[in-house]
Image (cartoon, rainbow, N blue to C red; front, top):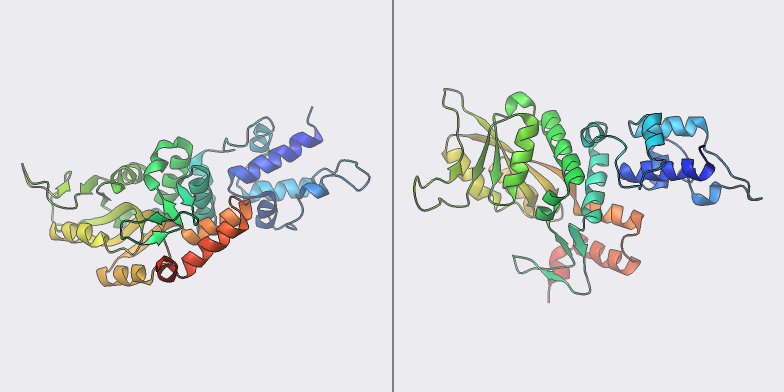
Amino acid sequence: MLTHDDIWAAIDRLAASSGYSPSGLAKKAGLDPTSFNKSKRKSPDGKPRWPSTESLSKILAATDSTMSDLMALVEGDGNTPCKSPAASALSLNREDIARKAAKILLDTKSVLFRPEEPFTLKSGRASPVYIDCRRLISFVDERNFLMDAGAHILREEIGPDKMDVIAGGETAGIPYGAFIAERLQKPMIYVRKEPKGYGRMAQIEGHLPEGKKKLNAVLVEDLQTDGGSKKIFIDAMRAAGLTVKHAFVVFHYGIFEASAQNMKEMGITLHALTTWWDVLEVAREGKYFNAKTLKSVESFLKAPDRWSAP
C-alpha cells in the first residue's frame, strides 16, 4: 500500500536524481517553489497533505519521467536515477545539464572547497577551490550521464556531419575523448604534449583516414582554466592537416578573461558541461558548505587575482 511518506520520499528522490532540491523541482515544473516544502506536507492540525495529481503530472513532465519511474523510487535509496543516464541527458536543457553536472562534481567530491587552507595550483596561484576531473572516470552512472550530455551538446551545437574525428589531449583528455568518440561513433586519436622521442616520433597517435577531404577534429580535454595549454594540441593537429574549430571540456573555470581571448585568437569555440559558477550555485542551494566558506569562494571567483595575492 502506498503511504503518505512513500509518495513524498519518491518526490524527494526524483528531485535528487534530476539534480534539484524539492523546491528547485517545483520551480522547474512551474509550481510554487514552496509546494514541496516539508512544512506543507501536513496541515496545521497534523493531518497528512498529499500532492495533487496535477503537481505529480507537472514534475514528471519536467523530468521526462513516467509514473512508473516515480513508483520505482518509492523503495529506492535516492541515489539510483529514475531513468537511464542517456534519457536523462537528452531531456535536459543546457542550464539543467550544467546544474546536474555541478551536483555530480560535488557528490563525487571531484570539487573541493577549502578557503581556510588554500590549494596551490600548477600556476602557483593560491585557490580556495580545486577540481579533479580524473576522479570522475571511476563513477560509472555519473560518468555515463556526463558523457551522454557531452555527446548530446556536440551533436546539437556542432552537428555530426561536421565532426570527423575526436581527439583526446594527453593525459586527462584521453579517457573523455574515448567516451565521447564511442557515443558519437567517430574515429578517435590522441595528441601528445610533445613527440614521444622514439619510434615514429609521433605526436598524434591513432589513424587518420586518407583522402581529399580535410577532416574536422574536435579536441576533448577534462577542463579549461585560461585555455593557454590548448595551443600545443591544436597546433599539432593543424600541422597534421586537421581542421580544428571546436573544443570540449567537462569543466570550464569560467572566471578568467584570458580564456575567451585565447579561444578567439586560436579560432576555437569552447563547449563545456559546467563552470565554477554552476558549482557555487548548486553548493549554496544544497547547503554543501557553510556560509563563510561559500562567501570566501564567491570572492575568489569574482576576483581570483586579488584573492590569490600575498
